[in-house]
Amino acid sequence: MAGGGGGLELPERQRRGKKHSKRKKKKRVGFRIDMTPMVDIVFLLLTFFMYTTTMVTPQVMEISVPKEVEENVEVNQANLFTLYVRGDGKLFFSMGADDPQPIEYSQLRAKAVELNLLRKNKLITAFKPSPDAPYGAVVQVLDILNQAEAEIIRQLQAEGLKRERKFAFVKLSPEEVEKLKGL
Amino acid sequence: MPKIKKKRLGFVIDMTPMVDVTFLLLTFFMFTAKFKSEAEAEQKFVIKRPYASADTSKLPDKDLAIIKVGIDTLSGDTSYYYTIINEIQRRQVYDNLNFTPEQRKPQLKVGLDLLDQLIMQTRITGPRTRFAIDGDRRIRYKWIEDAIDVLRKNNATAFNFVTEKRQ
Image (cartoon, rainbow over all chains, first blue to last red; front, side, top):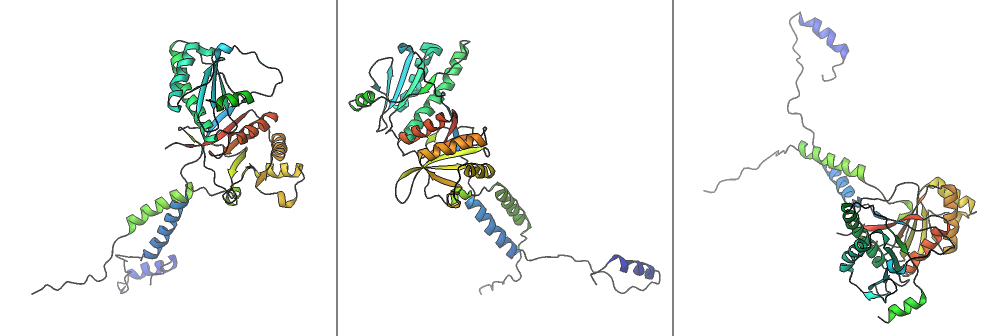
């Protein structure tokens, strides 16, 4: 009775004129499907995807190093700001040819901003992590310097200057390793 | 006289709105799900990435080669692993280096010499390939320094450090 194709309708309409049509089409009122099994499966899939999905994509820190060139570049010692990370993760800094002094990670940002503003764009930051330093500490220093950079750019812009960042990774010499050990 | 509780026979809840929302969530999670790559599935180490403050720059999806420096969970040894994301490029590089079928893994455990060769071939087959160093925060900086030197030697002077957002 439900299978009302187009073929069946036509004769029915014609019959209507003859006044007897006992079989009325029943309307399906309150039609229900048991959704429970479907809901079960859907929830199963949902929980699976919720647990397996990873929302955090790793972020990156962009690094650029100079090309390999043989010639050495002359650097004015007075404008050299050197940062050291010792094997145990302790941080040191020095200006020019001074001896390295210890500095806390929390103070580094303020120090970098202060020195850069003092020497404007002339300051060269040399970063000398010890080969034994934990990589996490090295990245932390780079991160702090990047944060300081935002502040420096803002301050220099206020003075109408364009920031030229001078930063380099430098290898620690054996004498410096010894020197740091004694501190 | 205590009331006799009527049993609620044929009790039905209309589940349609719940099903609607559930399907919406399901499709959302299905589309956003990103599965582990073949290379990651078989690696025997977990990289604890160094923390950095929030950054908007993300790892590129394609034209990427990753140098992983991981600590093996069982032996505790540190070593380099190299992955080229693009499969066609990976095949080309492996062909150029005459790799045996056993060596043709998506993620290779490499030494510095092999890393040098692989990076050189990666540069030849895809000059636009970006490099990323994905190192564990507990390793000594020496490992990273050596990897940087190899990259520099091959003229890949701009690369990325993979980090994790500090909470």
